[in-house]
Amino acid sequence: MKAVKKLTALAVALGVALSAAACSNGSSSQAQPSASASSSASAASQTPTDEAKPEVVLSTEGMPTVTKDKSGNPVLSFPPGSTPPAGLHVGLITKGDGATVGSSDSVLVNYVGQVWGKPDPFDSSYSRSGAAFFPLEQMIKGWIYGFPGRHVGDTFTISIPPELGYGSAGQEQAGIGGKDTIVFYVELLGTYSAQSAGDAHAQLTHESVPVSVTGELGKPVTKIDIKQSEEPTSISATILARGSGKSIKDGSNVIVAYAVQSWDGSVFSSTWQGEPAASIPAGPQQVNVTSDPQNFTSALIGVPQGSRVLLLVPKSDGDTKTQQQATPALAYVVDVLAVMD
Image (cartoon, rainbow, N blue to C red; front, side, top):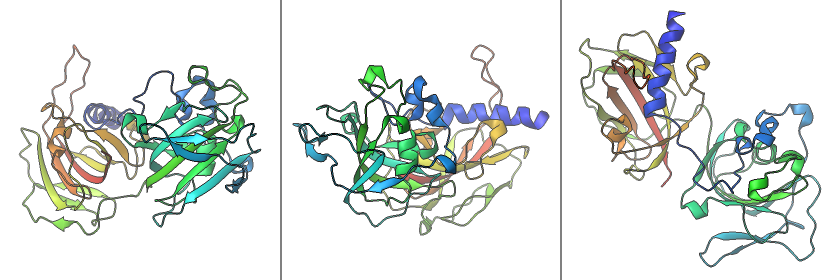
């Protein structure tokens, strides 16, 4: 029981500083492809069984075309009087040569969602000027089944009947009826499994640090050993291996994988393995980086994509007024998988 309590306290610390940034920045009238976007679609948030797997038809025949609006953003165009195809259809527009999406992956995408036959999108990542990051297992069924097998670099349309979308209740605020087929145009920018890590070719910095890390570059971190008894007294970041991608800025949304070790040696957990008792899911997470010095994501500003970083965080005595629990000093090893903006 004591170990579980320590893990719970650690989860609070993670929730404060490395919490997943909300993917929805739009108004309440928008409906994202996440099943949680609508309480009426809560059943869709459960990964369907293999027995329920629908056929995915790969064809552009009868699918809408993609045009641009006045702002240059993609809009789906439907032939007058056209009817949606039956079932789940994927129309490949451009074939990419990147990694293949797995059924349990998280994806980085730009997308537009539109009801079949309607002129305006109900949601668009382009209108928010930033790509979106989604774990497929939390998506509507049309995404769960339509994305695996696609490749990074692909652009495609995906036509989703109501039973694989928002169900018979639809999404009223977004103008989606219970009998509506919805269509997405997608640019697939990245795909990440629970074992995704930073750049295997990142440049080692050989700086002296108070921890040793088990886990090669490009592979998960499996252990962090604290080498000194003196705890950190301030937030600090040391790049263990420098990537070559674009640098993190104040306000950047970043995809990370990380492991964390308490200074007293009592707790180790990571996104590579997950820890249900501490509500730490397996798989990469989206983080919003802030320059607020009280938030240790601020130490990531200036770090390039692909890097492996050591973050040291001093202990917290907690705060009864805010119900923030006390946490030990922590050592994080963070792999920066992608800088989204």
